[in-house]
Image (cartoon, rainbow, N blue to C red):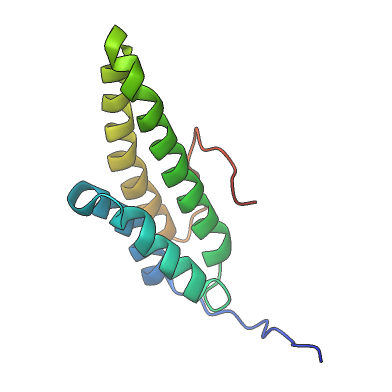
Length: 119
């Protein structure tokens, strides 16, 4: 039995905006900035236009920043890790806001320095 996917995706810039901004939950909860965008992506990727692509970008960025933070821990012994942690903190604050604004304006979003875990 074949299942046909409905190709009529709706444009919902507010959901995209919320998905990008939900990453900021990391500042308060730790893992909330990964879990909430994951749930939004899984539930809305077949319903909202551009959600699949942007959701993957968000998750790739979150995983990349998590790995960078992990790598920085042993590097703190030689002080380089403190610089990396500061950079990760700034990137995880700045890029979600920039991409939320872009998504709300209907512009393409991009997270630099992200490893592509989800293609």
